[in-house]
Each structure stands twice: as C-alpha cells, then as structure tokens.
Length: 70
Image 1 (cartoon, rainbow, N blue to C red):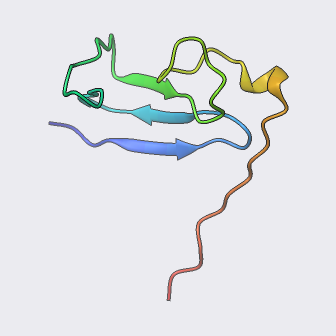
Image 2 (tube, one colour; image 1 turned 120 degrees about the vertical axis):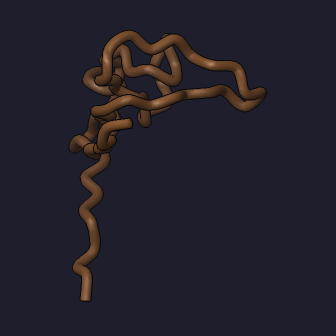
C-alpha cells in the first residue's frame, strides 16, 4: 500500500491523496474511483462526505495551521 497524504486547504476540503478505504458509521464502504478524494469539512455538501464546492458560497472560513514542533 502506498503513502497517503491529507492536505488541509484554507476554507476548503481535506484533500486526500493515496490509496484509502472510506467507510460510514456502520462500516459500509464508499466507492472511491482513483487515488485522490476531496472530503467536505464545511458541512454543506450535498454529496457528503465528499466535497461538492459548497464551501465557496456558504461563507465557510477556516485557516488552521499546524503547531510548531519542538
């Protein structure tokens, strides 16, 4: 299995790159085509858990940054 990376986008989705398995709360698998997926974090997507671009018009704002490691 290859490496997986998750990038937090300013006021946008989580971009997941690499081979993943995504399940719902009951353990049912989501069908994912390809190795890249954008996961909603604004809560407004009509295709949750996937991003449909709603964050662009919903007023969602988030600019988290990783803390400094010591």
